[in-house]
Amino acid sequence: MNSEGMKTGKSEVITIGKNGRSLSASLKWILAGIVLVIVISFFISIAIINNNERKSYAMASSENVLRTLSNRISSEMNNYKELTRIIMIDDRLLTFLRSEAYKVDTGMINDARYGVLDILYVTEGVDSVMIFRNDMIMMATNRFFYNYDYKFMNDDSWKKEILDRRGGATFSMNSFGIASRSDNKPVLTIGREINDLLSQKRTGIMIMNISQDVFISMLNELDLDDSVCIMGTDGTYLAGERKLMAFYDEKIPEKDSIITYESGSQGKIVRGCRVDLLPIIIVSATDYGPEGIPYGIVNTLIILMAVLVASAAFYGAYIRSRITKPVFELSKKIDQNEQSGSLVKIEDDMVYSELNMVKDSYNNMIEHVNELITTVIEKEKTVQRMEMRVLQEQIKPHFLYNSLETIGYLAMEAKADEVHDALETLGSFYRNFLSKGSREITLEREINIVKDYIALQKLRYGDIIDDVYDIDDAAAVYIVPKLILQPLVENSIYHGIRVKGERGTIGIKGRVEHGRLHLIVRDTGVGMSEETISSILNKRADYTDARIDGNKSGSFGLWDTIERIRIYSGHDDVVKITSEMGEFTQIEFIIWKTIE
Image 1 (cartoon, one colour):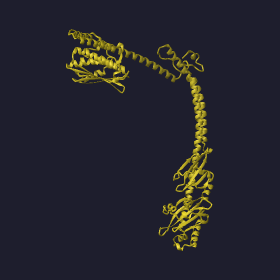
Image 2 (tube, rainbow, N blue to C red):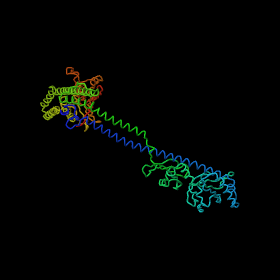
Image 3 (cartoon, one colour):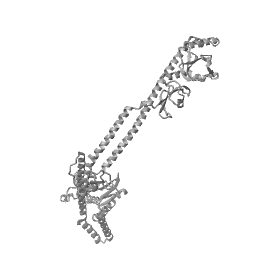
Image 4 (cartoon, rainbow, N blue to C red):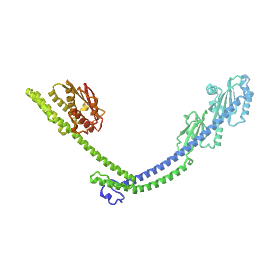
């Protein structure tokens, strides 16, 4: 933090860094933005709630109208169906139906008509009743108000729907198509088969036409004539508002399920349903009125919004004076600590417990960072000490002397080519071994060190050692700590194969699985006991050189290598040792690092 931003601590805007905005200003704008978003969201929500509630109210009102009118129509039509039952048992009508054809005359037909009319006097709305004998001799009331299609009348196709009901009533529009009113007014038609009460054989067919005045009267009684339209399923207008016929839909379900249409005009909802078991469709249009607006909820929300805005203003001022200012003071102390160049704790007490928590967290972080630095330094020292021990093991005189002694023997035997190869191998070994001071090398280079080392050992011990390598291409480029294989190979030779006293094999495998390098060194030496394996796996690198003796020197190299890999990988579970006494020893390293 620069000095200009901390001169008085009372500035409206305190600059942090070069181009930073103060926390106080940021909080002010953030709070203002939040309030603005809430206010806008509030009014949008109010509008949506009002619209949805008005729509829901309109839909509920429309559904109530449709249900009420549908039930009313169904009830009225049931009454007319019962009326057809009464007509069928009139004595004069039965005489007309049962008589032989040659006995039927105008007087008998008129008697049957008067019998039907006597029954119809007790009710309203029946426009006409038509009775057809099986021989199609017809009796009809209001006959002269209808035009008849005699050709279609003698066709049996219009009878099929009636006869399929087997005495039950069925509904249709406009006399099943065999007749129509002279003034083209629509009628709802009830048709049923007439069966003789004694023989139960069909004696004729009855058609009763219900006047559209019945439906007009219903709408007038319910005061729905300008908001509802009643029509037939074939699109025939019966009663109500004709404009709603534009919403006729033959896909309306068979039952009285209600469907909703797009009204085509703003502020109106149109819904329709089919009257159960009747060829009648009802369409209702309901305006979005103010009745559906939840004024109580809206007023409550407005009050809450006012309280919210006032609270936001209060908390904005509170945050500025009671929070951001102390935060700046804490930031100033942290900045001073940073500029001093030392990681020391802040000892001053803060005004609020939350800021004390921040201060404590900062102090804990400083303490943890110091601990991490100390740990890293100690680990670095440990790694350097281990690497130095490995280097010392390989450059101490006895190995070099033994190698030179062997080369001298070859020279005395005048084996010039072998002397040259041996010197080349020795030079290659130390060149890769030193690696220009590098602490990490590729596995391929590590394998070359091992190959040179075994080649030098073969010069001394002859052909008692065989070495086999199986290194994947992906594993060859993996970066590993230097000299992690040579100590294991040395142990295999000196503490495994030589002790066993017979020819042995050292196999080295390398593969990459799930991003981890698996290195396996296996020898056919004397093996290890479970006790020795347990001691190696549980040993940590807190020992000193004074604790190493000749009997443990083999384990010492392995201990150091395991600990170096643990530090390098950052994991403890990096080694697996399996062995069988007198048969073999296998050591597997698992290294968590990426390839080069």
